[in-house]
Length: 287
Image (cartoon, rainbow, N blue to C red; front, side, top):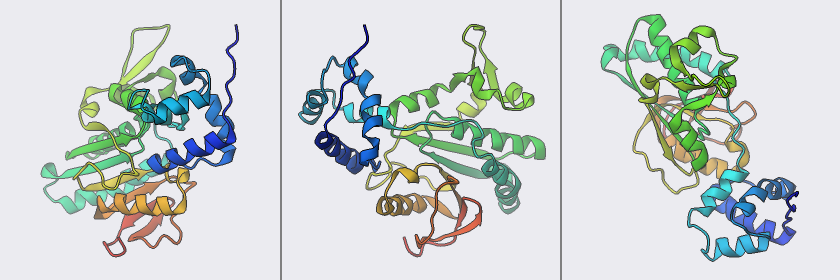
């Protein structure tokens, strides 16, 4: 028997959409109503709830689990990511960022490079950063310490990032030598999967972080920050607020990477554009 498709009223969608925007910064214009109600069908069935009015009443009155807003945002978030997505950014790290880092470090064996994948989704971006760093060290015959923070608001995606297990199809486009060096292949031929090797997994800390929070739960300063394909979900004022807080965590001379469809034009931030969607922090003026 086919499940009934449950619809949400315009007024209730606007009410919930406003709360989602306030909590997570995600824009919820009226055009997203169809997507919203389609994605939440399974969640309503899981809770045995038969209308969005009932779901909202339970949500707002605390009659569902207190983490339900986090579950809700899981369902409406777009978590598109791949290994080496927008590959020119990783080439820029290999060809410009890391040679500069090694040159300036001097005794680079004692140096520490910190990177942050903000909005990491299921983790491929963070692991790609790790692979890029490992490949550079292997090719150049150098070693330095590094750590990567991977954060997101989707608890479901963070669990995937923590496990670091992916369908075999996720690495189909990677060079064979990269697959051999950085991925373990499962023995299950019916549902083949790969797992990122322990050496890189141990370098990555996966954590929940909402970019809308007034301050961030990390005291680290970073040399590289990826904030890609995240700003597009925010309005201009939220973008500016998030960017200011993110840039506070970026070292002067550090690099910020954003998505190719995103722009920082007229933001008046202490950043200098040096390549498509790549910025370097110049100073702290304007924060």
